Length: 336
Image (tube, rainbow, N blue to C red; front, side, top):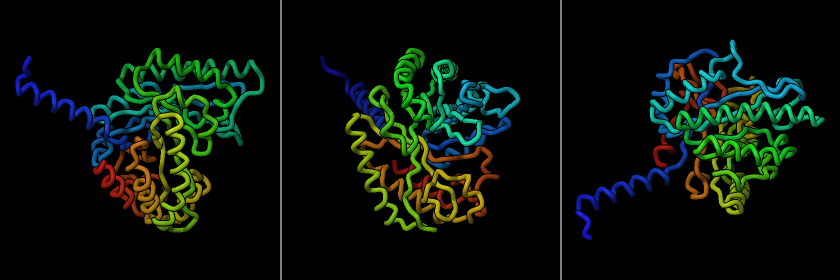
């Protein structure tokens, strides 16, 4: 049977659009959660970054090895309530962003980081697992109800995962019963090898804070040289598991020595501002990874909705807003 010419071209156009949609990188920005309800019109400024995805963070808290997790705290930060999470997602969608929902775990007892916390007896492990499941499955339902495109089962809780492998295998299955979008886990940059279930997920998520320079102001060529073995390692990881890789976080403070241990923000609050260092470090990451077909994209850390009061020439924080790094990101995202 002959196909009318008009229908043929409509079908061809639809195929081309679909192909373009799936070939485009996840050009992402991590939206900062605020203490008070923000003006969500700030998403309009974010659109100028040429990002097509945003990540929304949902936090839970662990007060002790026996406490389990606590979430949806009332009289706390607006962005960490269930209502706030929904509104961030809803307004991101309003401005045509795809959404990645990330559940962060914050430990609130001294000297213990989320990547190393755990329990010492069966009772406490059971309580931790039960409360964590309640938290994750609640978020999975929100993700499904609000058409969130990607969802993580956790962020930088590598020791918890390593110690309770069978629990997380079961949790992934439970999430898939509720949520039909793409699922990942956000491994810390140094914990990638500990994750036993990459094959169960849709892509490999890495919070990418690798050291790329030890210089006060990095040199672009030197940063790229430092990234070569990291790139090779990640390529091998992608091939081994037949999964694409996403930097579920990546970023640099605008300070001296920003390429060295870029995760170490608390120790560097007083380090002198260096906008050029941030700019070069971003260029190195973007130019090294975005052109690779096994690399799906990433989420710059991070962006405040109150644009006019964020970043600037005297700010040494992670945000690229109102700094040279912002133009680096927007120009690069436009190409991909």
